[in-house]
Length: 271
Length: 191
Image 1: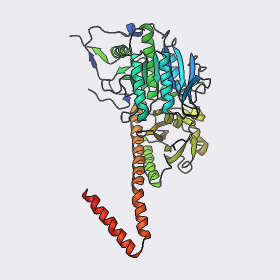
Image 2 (image 1 turned 120 degrees about the vertical axis):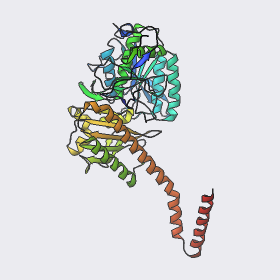
Image 3 (image 1 turned 120 degrees about the horizontal axis):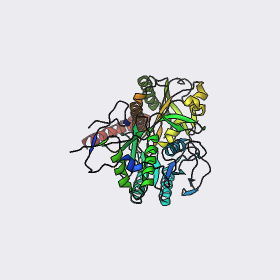
Image 4 (image 1 turned 90 degrees about the vertical axis):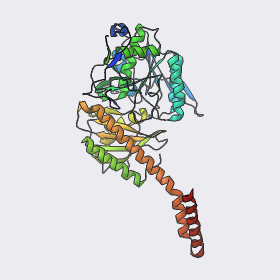
């Protein structure tokens, strides 16, 4: 097996070929051909989303999590938009791939970009209660105390048919939720095709999507060329939205299987 | 975390000096976060800004470092000069406006300690992911240096206080206290 760099699949690297023993191929045409993500909600748990950015094209609903004087979290509608631009960058990627999907935003960072595990847990919990089909988490936490509850939420999502898509951190970093098996964890490949993705047979990163030199929506209204696993995750989140729009009956386990079957490096070996 | 000690600063300076050299960058810096603060503080800078930036505080909302700190995710921006707001941390102090910034969080087990940034490295698309891994390794090195220095400082606290107390004693009391400490040392060695 070819060893992958910890952060992703490099420019000159060839993704390892993974044989499939399944008797019938799941084609990309079957999986998401003709789909634009109609009827599927993709929720971005992030820094907020600027709905009026031309690459985002509107937000279905935006909320934020605030803490009261006792430190208790409360979810309320949010008109702040995006406090950093990170969430807007991710939303633009989702919109480009799944133009008909409903984009919702849960802002878990304060205006000063501080934000603790309490907001993250409350925001994710709220997103699960809404029954959104896909939740993108282009952030992570290193706090073990938060990780335990995060793990429970990830498992709840998995069985409640909400697909959590989380960007990977460096392999040497113990951060969450991307290391949980109930989420779809995504790192970057160095290619330029937004619809190209690879299955990684060497977990905890399960899939590799475009994350290098992505022209992302920028707070100033234009775009910026950016690199990071933060931008690989929303590519997969959007592709999952395409799949679920066409096949709403699929569970997170099955969507992972479809991603595997349609990955660019998975090859069917005929006997 | 608490303000960095001089030993920690020396370690961090070594890290940014090596990072700058390895990446062939115009500058490299480490910003640290004090628990509960809405700011990051330049703790070590190599190259552009090294003489003016150390000690300067910037709001978390300023630039790429804030993004990286808040999301705990490494990030590279290739034409940040087109949005000077995002280069404001360095540009406001030195007049030097970087074009490209790559940054990674310094993470320990429980929280983010700060951010390491590399400014204007030669652009080689084919090395982007390797560079991100490499910067992650530098971030890990810096975080571990901070942890080790903090541990050493904490461990040296009681010993230093004991030495100060011994030094303050005179005559027979000092001799007796010294014998006591030596006996304690013998007991600990036998454990």
